[in-house]
Amino acid sequence: MTFGAMPPPSTRPPQRRSRARRFVPLGIAAWVVLEVWLLIVVGDATNGLTVFLLLLAGVVAGSLVIKRAGRRAWRSLTESLQSGGPAAQSGKSGSAGNGNTMPMLGGLLLMVPGLVSDVAGLLCLFPPTGKLIQRRTEKLLNRRAGQGQGPGSFGEAFQQARIHRPGGKVVQGEVIRDDAAGDGPPAPPRQDPPLTR
Image (tube, rainbow, N blue to C red):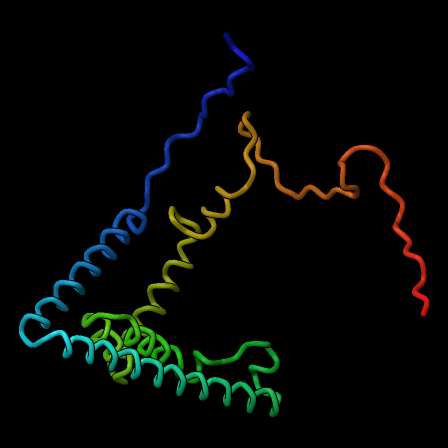
């Protein structure tokens, strides 16, 4: 008993999963397990109050660092907009050019509960290691951007998000309906009576 025609089998070869899609979830899981294990070790060596105070100190320090970097970025933006500098012409805040990226990231990592994230946040805040991390990240992102759209890239995600018809034909666009029902002539515009006192 069949109710309709089956769509033809896909002729596209199966796509390989990128390394990032395969290893990022495993890395995040390992990081969470390591954070919990370190907190348990510190709790066994001292007591629960020390662990709580360490986590609280990380949250407070991280929020202060983010607040300070945010104020600096806001001040830089307002000065640039008032003077008509490059940020005013391009419409961007220029926070990366003023060195606010690594303090923001460091503060965020300090706020995340755990000791490994606190160490990573402190490395981002320490100027020599922060600059080194920023240079390496920019180099990696520029190299990825130069390679084009590989598996796991935003371009591939956009390609997969498009509407696919059963025959393999890709249809790009939007459906715009003028009326609520979708069929028949459009309804005349509604006219409300004037308000009277």
